Every structure is written in C-alpha cells, then in structure tokens.
Image 1: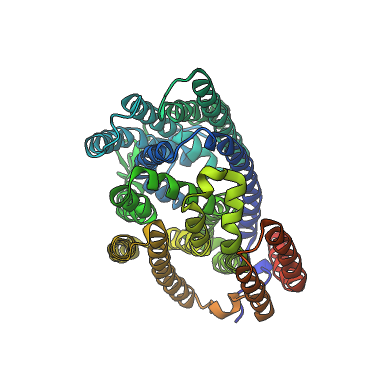
Image 2 (image 1 turned 60 degrees about the horizontal axis):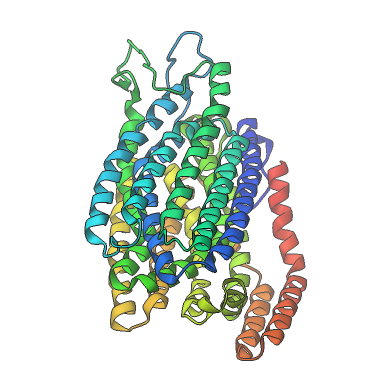
Length: 540
C-alpha cells in the first residue's frame, strides 16, 4: 500500500487535531529560525570584518563548551517528557493541569545537572587548551558558564510551552534572546575595536549572558500567567499519591525519570557524534584552521538550522503524541505518523538533489561575496563546497532519528546506543585517516561526517520500516525518491556549472540565475504534486 495518502475519518479527531497543532507549530518555529538566523547572519557579516580566524576558532571552542553542557543536562529529559501520556495521576485537588506539574518538576533537574557538567567540562577545557593566555579568556569562560546556567533555568518554561504546544511563547522568547545577543555582541565588538581594546572572546561571552538572561525573563513572565490560570506552579512542588509510589521524593515521576536515564546514554553518544567534527578539529588542527572550519560549517548548516531543525523538533513532538499508547488506542496515530514522515522525507530529498547540484560550484563565490577577501583567500571556500554534500544527509538523519526517539522502547534505545557508539568509533578512525593520513584537512573531516551520517540513516531506515511492518503498514522507501526528470535536470545543470567554474564571477552569477530558473520550470509539476499532497493532508 502507498503511505502518502489523505487521512480518513477513521484516524480519529485526536490525531487530526494533533497534526493541525503541529503544523501550526512548524510555522512559528520556522518563523523563529528564519528571523533569528537572518539577524544573526547579518550581524556575523559585520563581525567577520573585525575577527581573525584565530579569534573565531576560540569562540567556536567556547560555543562547543556551552552546547555540550546544555545538551548533557537537558536533552534526555526533554525526550523523556515527550513520552508523557495521560497516565500521570492527579497531583493536587483543584489543579487544572496535573501533568504539567510533573513536567515542571522534572525540568528543574536540568539546573543541578548543568552545575555538574559545567564544572567537569569547564575544568577539563581550561586545563587542556593552549589559549588560556588569550586576553580575557578566563573571564569569558566564566561568563559562558553563567549564561549556560541561566539558559537551563529557563527549561521549565520551555517544557510547559512544549507540552501545551505554546509555540508563540517559545518563538517570542527565543527570538527576543537572539536579537538581544546579536545587538550586544556586535556593539561591544565594534566599540572595543574603535578604542583599540583587545577583548578577545569577551564580547561573545557578554552576548551569551544577555541571551540567557533574556530567555529566562521572557519565559518567566509568559509562563507564570499560564501557571496562575491553570493552577500549577513554575517551581518544584510535591505530588502526593498515597495509592501508588509513582514519584521519587514526591517530586519526580519514577517512570519518566528512569526513561530519561536510559535516554541520557543515547543522547550523550548522539552529541559526541554530532559534535565529533568540532572535537576532532580542536585536537588535530591549529586554532586558525578551527576558525576556518567553524566559518564553513556555520554557513553550510545555515539552511539546516533555519528549515530542517524546526521541522525536526515539531515532528518529534507530533510523533510522540500520535504514537503514544493512549493516542493510538483512541484515534490510531500510525497512518498519520507514516504520512507525515513520508511527506517530510520526500520534500527533503527534493531539496537535497537541488542543493547538491548547485551548492558546491557556487559556494566559494558566495563566500567571497559575503565574508570578504580575508576569508576567501583561505581554504574556507573549498570546505564549504564539500559541506554542501553533507547538508542533505544532515536533514534526512534528523527526521529519521526524531521518529526513532519518539517510538523506540528502552531496549531499542540501548541497541541504538550500541550501534551509534560503533559509528562514532568508525567516524573517529575515518576522520583521522582523512585529515592526518591523507592530509585533506577540514574537507576530509566533512567526508568522514558524510560516511558516518549515511550509516546512521541506514540504521534508522531499517528501524522505521520494521516498525511500520509490525503495524501492518508498508513504508515504501522507493516512493520517496524524486522524479527522474528532476534528478536528470539537476545533474545536467550541476555538470555545466562545474564545467565553467573557472570563468568570471559575472558569468557564474548569470549561470546560477539561469540554473535556478530552468530547474524550477522543469520540476514545477512534480513539486506541485508533492506539495499538494502535503497541504491536503494537513488540511484534513
């Protein structure tokens, strides 16, 4: 049977309402990503005129420190809370939303976890790095630690918004924080340069503190109003249940806590895999080369962060609700989940073929225009061109692993963790071979990422097909492959672009414009067919 079809009334009103809410959330999240990333992009273009590759490399290391602390502290809890069903018992008489108190209580665990991981990773980083003599470095890492704790303190607000699908509040909080961070970072950098003061990475650290403070403030103000209206507390509050022992210390739901501990191992391995390129670059290259790779990776993953990440987050939330035991029993969420996964994957593949054909030949030209001569004279252009082959795999892996994390049992998550550990080991070997043995530098690291991501996609695809087979659904991967006319058009235009890449910039720009127009015309009918199915499904 074909997976891509319109949902019928048999799927139930619950599934349809969840899909509609998720589709609405996607729009808000995409708007959030677009607005914040466009602002960040504009500010970064200005900052690049004031930054050296070495300073950008240091800021990339500090950003990795922050990301690691935040990820280790909250990701497993976030994924566990998505599994919450209506089985959580009543916490207080007269409470309007007892499940929400369970979510709030567990979310506060991120703060002590953040203190623990910030201490461990911070001390390890300071002792292992060779840039401690950089101006204001110790001040900067202290401020980054403070900023991380402020961001984690806002996690209860995020969890409430996620549970209740309050995407407007989340968009408001994160966009305001990103705007404030950009303005402060840019202002401090320009002011320091104007007066001849070398602040090192301190400007980035101050901007990060502003981000965390703004995020916490907006969530505290907006979520507190909801808490007063619905009768739950934004602070940890005891949940008394005399009939059954369902909570640790009358605060933390036992089942969800254990699930979070199981997911933490899998999340930790995933983070090492995701950030493995940055870790390898830090150990195998100079600080200047780290800055070049950071620039190429940031530009290369711009589309993934703006478009793919919001879809992945919303889809993970949707899959968890559609395929939870209570939802499946009421409305049958298997078919809607299969349709959603198939539609998103097919659209990803459509965009991927287009990006792979035109991205690599034009990436160095685009970089020279937006980043200036200082960066175009480096190897950043060739690294960015190679990164274009990695972006489609990043997108496909994101949506497939979102599905796996939403439905996999504890045993299956342990199995995935074992496989991912094997993939990470293979990635480290491949990265060392490409970078050190073959001397490909940052380009070799991108190729190692391609190999690693391909293996992860294969594992997730096998899991997904097996899952739907057990539900009586035939998830046909071949139906997701783009139209042959579309693929042929993109391959042909990409070959022409590569053939004349040595010509002048004017000709390249004209070719790029013509290539986009021709490809859009040749694939208009196919694109309309895919999008019409997606729109029709969400309207249903």
